[in-house]
Length: 434
Picture 1: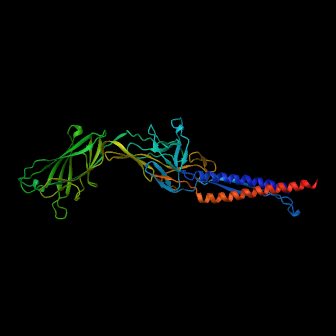
Picture 2 (picture 1 turned 90 degrees about the vertical axis):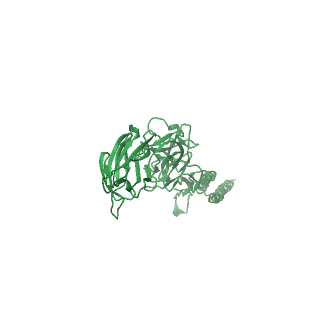
């Protein structure tokens, strides 16, 4: 019985070391594989108690258990592609197989820590191995809608259309203009001073606000007042706002707005110095400055000069670049300078990453051992940041694996020697009866 148990223990040792050799071979073979998580073999002894007081011992042997160390993170390697993605910290990118895209129902969730994504013929971001990146689509204004964090319902394949065009309508404008104080004095000519400011409509068309400043000329002295009239070219030159502007003449605030009186059109908000205008495409907020603000409309000296005019929006432009920031937001840049947020990539996390089910192409799926997944905003909770222009390297340490390979070879040889010795002892036992 004791000799037989020794033979069984030797065979178990061979099997266990063969398993360990397989993990070492896999790790070394994938030492250059991006996103590879190394496998580990752990040995567990098997104890069989049989007549300990009688001096009889039965060898139980050993068994090997393998695991994938998914929580280990490889070094980040810089690349030249903006859509090469990696995670600096905990969390994984949500992906699915390309064969699942377009099928009915939710896409089966898979996750990976890194990927080299490129648009295919239909603009879908995918890797060469067929992994499709999933994300939450943004609204037309670039905001991300509220989505459930424990379900895949809101996730969609990320689509980048290289021929996509987009315009950005103007919604905010700021006017910094100096009006000549001499024009409001008695005897001045009193002619209107014109100003035309371009803005962009909802369809990317170029429109203009035509603003005229007409001084109020008194019979004597100086009125320091103007009539400002605003017309919209998109409405055939219709007046959308008319105001009386009065400027301060005191030493401390001389030349700044003292009051704004609304004659018609959008109201003046004294708290933030804005006019609530309505152009053909919708509301337009125009900042002319608060009372006493030297950065808005002013009346100084004898020159009419636009000093600072700014606005948002842009004409229709062609897509030139797509990048992902550290928070997982995918932004498209157009040749007009317009930047629009189009997707958000959440990061997937589970309570026990090492319990995930490992699949091909460095992908993983949830299992009973891993626990349920949760979709985090990158950088929130336990998750790290999304890094573009980067790939995660393999977690294999070749030097450590080669050292383990030598140890495994010696252990395998030793177990084979045990079997050889048992065979010789059994042969001696057989020779007794001759």
